[in-house]
Length: 353
Image (cartoon, rainbow, N blue to C red; front, side, top):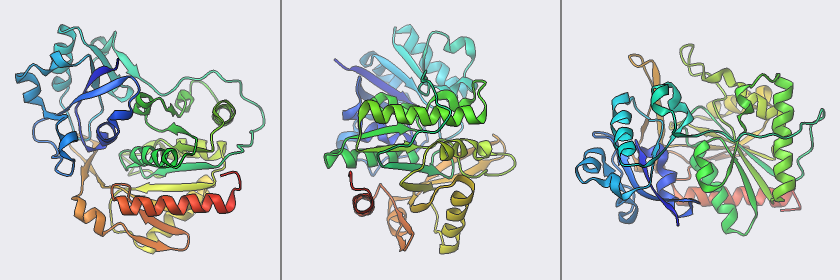
């Protein structure tokens, strides 16, 4: 029997939890709790919308009694710690299990989260080799301009499309929430753990090779955490370190770059293509245009994310030229066309698929 799950604070960046909730391994999404004044979800069908409730209704109707597990997630917007504390205190009082994303360690009081379950990146203990192993199945690499630029949704949608066509795929995700579906994540060695750069590269490569040999997939999809570029001097985005690690650990057959929403000219796409080629050694042919806009909040000294209206997204995400193809997975026609192109490219160039 699956545990009934409530997610807080729910926002559009967590839509995969709602749209693919039936595929969660050990959980049944029961409530997606949205703070007052946050986003609306008009584009969601009635069945899924029934799972969304506002924060005050969750309290007024004692809906905590209907769940087994509370999952606390990092927000798109600035959230007062009191919102987390109020809900987690109620969950503890009712004897509910509490899980939280690792990024909240810097938001919540350490004494508060003691005893809760942290949803971390995967920890591995695999013997690395001094020489990099060749990965003998197709690899699709998904990179991005930063956090919340649609990488996670793209990884899950791409995985779903391969499964629906009968291919066996392995996903190594950039998002620890993917573990709720039973997928792998990029290993926690990207955080350093005392390893040199070379040791990190060799360990990541050994991990990918281990998954290839253990699961024997037709294709491996790898989501790359972080950004290929810094946002500004105030928001360095990790200086592109993690993409550089993974770009050295594996040679992808196809690379997709996920972008924030915008009207990109050919010169912009070419500039990003050159950056990825000369800095990370990967050739980008596909550009995923997400529905998120990224803005810096100087008062909070952090990035905040907003979603564009769906009609604008559909109208402004189509661009196709040799070596540069844009698409969006929220638009079913755009998604299907992009996936057909990817399948065709793999079939024409890689006999095993």
